[in-house]
Every structure is written in C-alpha cells, then in structure tokens.
Amino acid sequence: MMMSMRAVARSAPRTFTRLSATTLRQSRVAQTSSLLKSSWTPLRSSQQFASAFSTSQLRQKQQSSEVDEELSVKLESEIQLESEMRDSELPASVKDFLDNSPFELKDVPGKEDVVLTRKLGNETITVTFSISDLTNYENSEDFGDDALGDEDADSPENQRASEEAEAEEGLEGDDDQVPPTPCRLNVVVEKPGKGALNIEAIAQGGQVIVDNFYYFKDPKLAHGESAEISHAAQELYPGPPFGSLDEDLQLLMERYLEERGITQALAVFVPDYMDIKEQREYQTWLKDIKSFIDAK
Image (cartoon, rainbow, N blue to C red; front, side):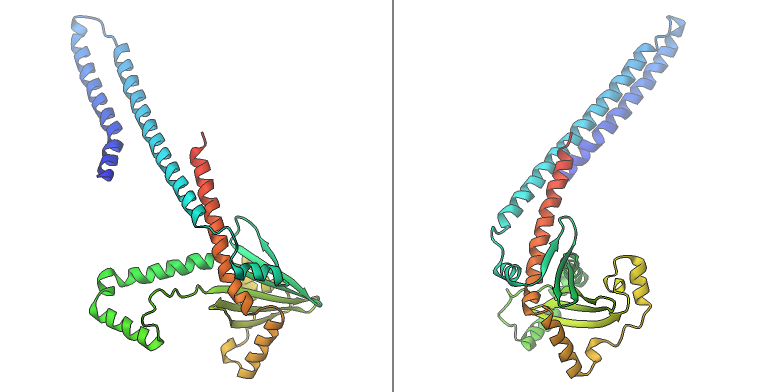
C-alpha cells in the first residue's frame, strides 16, 4: 500500500504537467479561431504555463522534503538503537590486552585498518588487521544461505545432511553457538638493514593459525602500502606453504611468533576489538549521513 501511494505521489506532478500542456494547446486553438473577431492575447497562455510549472516544482519540492524528514527520523532511530546496544565498558579481553600488552594501538577513526606496534631489541614488530574482514565474512555467509534457496535449505535431504554433520562435529543441541569470525593478521618483523619477515595468519577461536611465512630484503615489500609494492612482492619467490614444512620447523616458527607477542591473548583480542571498532564506525557513518540530510 505504501509503495502504491508513493507511486501515485511521484506521478502526480507529471500528470498535472501533461494536463496543463493539453489545456494550453486547446487554448491556443481557441485563440487562433478568435483572431477573426478580436486581437490575439498570448499573455494569458504564458501565465498559465508559468503557473503550471511553478506548481509542479512546488509539489516536487514538498515531496522531497517529506522524504528527507522520514529518512532523518529513521537514521536517528538507528543511531539511538546502536547507542543502546553499545556497552559502556570495554570487554575484559580488550581491556586486559590494552593494559598489559607491550603493543601500542593505532586506530584512526574512519579508517578500516587497525595497527599494533612494539619494539623488541632491535626489532620492530607490526600487526595489522581490518574490520573489512568482518563485513566480508558476514556477506559470504549471507551469500551461502541465499545460494541454497529457502526451499532447498528446508528440504528433507538438506535437513538430514545438516543433522548428520552436526552429529559428527558433536554440536547437537548447541544451536545457539555462533562460530567465531576469522580475522586476518598481517605480521611484520623488521631489523635495521636486514629486511623483514612477513607472516600471514588467521586469528580465530583464540588461536593464531599461520598461513604463510615470507622474507623480504626490502621491508617495504612486507607492508604492501601501494599497488606497485604489492605487485613487486608477488613477483618474488614466496617460499613453500607453511603447512607443508617439517612439523618441528612449524612449531619453532610458531614459538618465534609467540615470543614476539603473537599469542593466544592477541587472537582473543583482535575479533573482540574488531566488533567494537565496527560499531563505532557504523554509528559515525549514520551520524554523517543524517548531518548531510539535515543540512539546509
């Protein structure tokens, strides 16, 4: 019903303009016929056209103002909802990490990336993660659900397969459990004049899972701050996949990272802080949009 009313409202000015144009043409025909009896008076036709045009503009402006007001009210409602959902205190995992970790946090409002830095001897250690991972992960889940379709998801075959998978994983009766969001970590360990190690890892479920272990003679290649630098890094030999290395070598490399602060505490902190930052940025985005809509 609301959509049909909006459609009528949108078409009203156009209909009025068409009717006005028809009236104008008829008036001109009548005026042409009356030339045999009296002089032509074009001023009246011009006044009719100006009146129709002005009225149409006024109605369009009124409709636009109504939409702006509705949108502003809705945005304010969303801002209030997010404010009520936001906790006044930081989660214990976040507070403990910030209070006790040797890392310094760099979080620039409006930016997606968060950076942790620390010094260890002559080494500079940088850990970068991004709230874009949270959005991408949620979108991939939505895509997976949509791809199945409602009918396919509810089919007996899919329900049976889902139940069997849950039974194998020991998750029966635990439907409320939410899988942790995987967060990508880009870890860089630099030494002056010696290049840098670049470690790609995932923080998930309180664990740091290493994917790749690179070495670059030029530390700039480890950070990939531009498309040209990233392209140059891709041209170099990356080394074998981490999972294909000797198990003892993998364990020693993981211990190497733990000594530099890439620990379980970091793996717990990153997803929790990512949620906090995403909510902050969303609230700021809502306020910026509302401020623009309300501006006169």
